[in-house]
Amino acid sequence: MSDDFPSFARKAREILEGKSGLKEIEDFRELLCGDCPFYHHGEEENEECGSFRLLKALLERDAFDLERALNELE
Image (tube, rainbow, N blue to C red; front, side, top):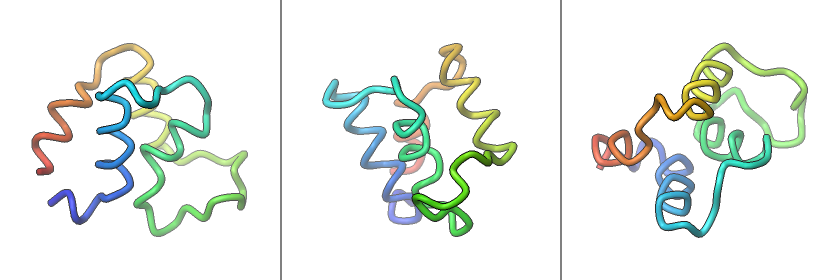
């Protein structure tokens, strides 16, 4: 199933391996929006969908287990 979410899987692995983080808004977009058919990098980036806002808030509060999500997708 990680084939369905390659951008998420790649960025999640980078974060879990310490090669990347979730410090800038672009990090969150890369992780959460990279596989979305409605997201186009560089276009309307001041707009955020509800799913992005929810998952970003959960990640910021350490309420979303990135490793578990990645494992479930693989």
